[in-house]
Image (tube, rainbow, N blue to C red):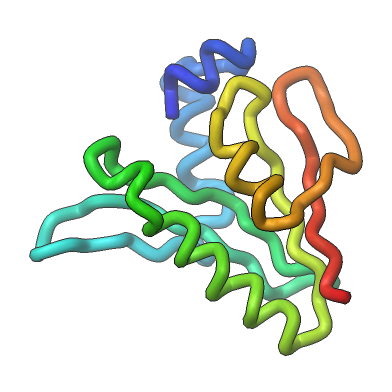
Length: 121
């Protein structure tokens, strides 16, 4: 993730990285495979929208459909609850293509990220 942050011009200082990790920590799920840490997932269902706060997979698991499957499950939960799904993606992160294939659209941006939404209907 650090390389996407650097390429997007985001702060990658140790303090910034720690703040990013701790933001929404109560929503964090550690992803394990055969007892080994392979990712981190932060999904917030507490507000008016369902929010994908963070999804990170170990490089060896990227591009195999796991991220898509996790997102599709979350989208189904949001639709069942009548909620939109929102997320922010770093401008240099190629995951934006996956989000667009799932139906997310850019609704805004800031200096480093695109703000995306998937309406429930």
